[in-house]
Image (cartoon, rainbow, N blue to C red):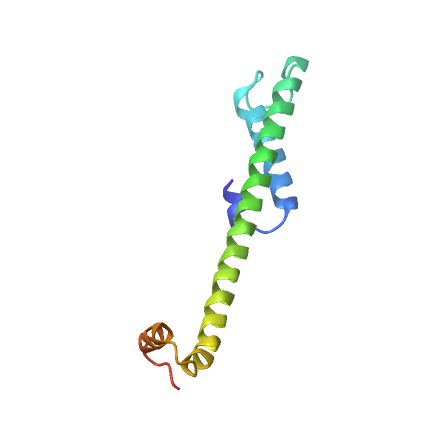
Length: 108
């Protein structure tokens, strides 16, 4: 999942999922420190690869959604800043109270 958080794109997630299966095969299956394994591990490798790929894919999607949400929030703040001069021209007292609370550095 660390790869999905720090990179953009599914190719890196695919490569890291494959690499994790190879590392598991090398260190934890018999014969140890070899890429040879018995055919009994094929299902294990397939499940591991699928789980790693799904978690990386979901993490990438969540990361993209968080970036999109941050951009929307930034755009909304910009719209509010541009709308405030228009609101000052209205005689509504509630709008006037809001306009008095402008952040520092805001010029009229």
